[in-house]
Length: 123
Image 1 (cartoon, rainbow, N blue to C red):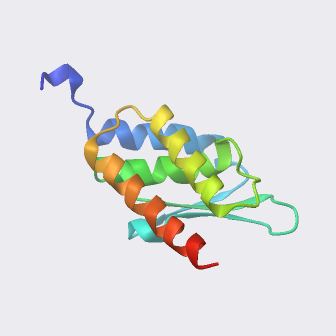
Image 2 (image 1 turned 45 degrees about the vertical axis):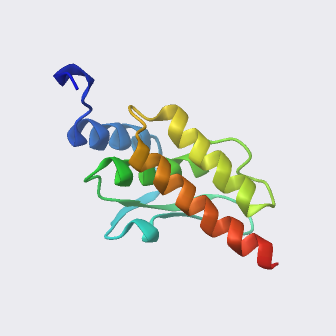
């Protein structure tokens, strides 16, 4: 792949920092050690954004996870009562707003959605 087509981890990290800067004034933003710890915390009564927990951007997959969490804030249908609807649309926002989207990122999204699908089938 030619050099100009390669999106470096530093560019991904900067992109996430730019996106999350919009929330930095009002919201605590923390770095978590593991991808599965990433989340957005909101007030259950008001829906107000309280905290953003993002993984350190070390790869395309951690970048996709961070974008997914930001997608829970900026994406469509995040007030849906259906968890799977919120998850699908947060991943869609991540994919549409990523500097790159590769197979590893896609596998991560598919795996995460499968986890939620399996749990929704049990209810």
